[in-house]
Each structure stands twice: as structure tokens, then as C-alpha cells.
Length: 179
Ligand SMILES: CC(C)(COP(=O)(O)OP(=O)(O)OC[C@H]1O[C@@H](n2cnc3c(N)ncnc32)[C@H](O)[C@@H]1OP(=O)(O)O)[C@@H](O)C(=O)NCCC(=O)NCCS
Image 1 (cartoon, rainbow, N blue to C red):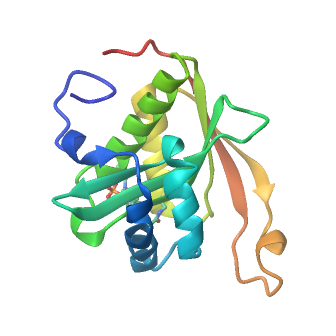
Image 2 (cartoon, helix red, strand yellow):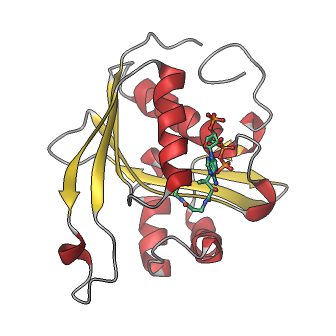
């Protein structure tokens, strides 16, 4: 069942928290997008271990086809900061990114005894897919999406090669959790 309602979720059986052995495949999946900043394999190993409770992967017959990495900012445990979202080419357009984020938010809230969670992320102005994805998430959950300036391009690249990364705040998500 979907984490959001009673509709069957075709991805439900493929979604799980990452483990250490996923780190190299996570690194490859992000590299293959060609648009996300690629971090070291060590960084993905940290996400798959220390931050596994706030991250999720889609594992289809042993092949990693989606991931979301995230964490709770230490001073704001009611926030789930979504760092990277990636879906393999062959799995796109089938609702996988949405299923992963719904399942991750559900898991995080369940682990926090149903307390509200606000999703935060930064999205470059030109990333229309990402904006559509987070906009759809806000609409599905019936919560506001607010945008504000956050990381400027100058903080990300001395040569001005990186766009600004404004902050999106989505929530708080307060609906009672269903079983
Ligand atoms: C963005 C990405 C994660 C979407 O994955 P996906 O599994 O295909 O997304 P979904 O099928 O769950 O679609 C979620 C919503 O985003 C929209 N969307 C997805 N890709 C889109 C695109 N390229 N352009 C416009 N809208 C798009 C969908 O229409 C859907 O909205 P809806 O529910 O209103 O119809 C995937 O294309 C990807 O990995 N891109 C490269 C990495 C990237 O840009 N990551 C940042 C994303 S936050």
C-alpha cells in the first residue's frame, strides 16, 4: 500500500533504507544523471550508514534504480533536508521519485512517533524537473511550498559556474499516519 493513501504502490516492494554495500551503486546512479553534483564514494557511504534512517533507495531485482539522500539538520530535528534525488533513465516517469519521497517522509515521521515533519531542499532555478517534483509533493500532501533565497552561486563556485540554490520549505506535514 502507498504510504499516503490506500492505492497500491507498484514500487512499495522495491523501497528500503540504504546499506553500506549500496554506496558505490549510489555514486554511479548520481554520476549517470549528468546533472547532479557528484560527491565522493565516501560521502555516499556515510549517507548509506550514518544517514540511512533519513535516506531511501529503490532496489529492483538487485539493481539500484533510485535514491534520495537526506538528513535532519542537528538543531532542527523536525526538518527532513532532502539532499539528492536521482532516478535511473529507465525508471523515470513511473512515479518512482514520488513513491520514494512519500515512503521516506512516512518512515521519518513514524520513527518520530508521528510528529510533523517539514521537508526542505534547495533547487536551482533551471531545474524544472526538480521543481515539478517538489511542487507535486506539496500538492499531494496539501501543504504549502515556500521559496526563499539561501545558498548563492558565489558560495558554490568561485568561477560563477554554479547557479543559486534557493531554499524550498514544504510543510509542515501533519496528517495522521495511516497503518
Ligand atoms: C527529477 C527525477 C528525480 C524525477 O524522477 P521520476 O521518478 O521520473 O519522477 P516522478 O515520476 O515521481 O514524477 C514526479 C513529478 O515530477 C514531474 N516530473 C518528473 N520529471 C519531470 C521533468 N523532466 N519535467 C517536468 N516535470 C517532471 C512529474 O510530472 C510528476 O509530477 P505530477 O505528479 O504532477 O505528474 C528524475 O528525472 C531524475 O533523476 N533527474 C535527474 C536528477 C535530478 O534532476 N534530480 C533532482 C530532482 S529533485
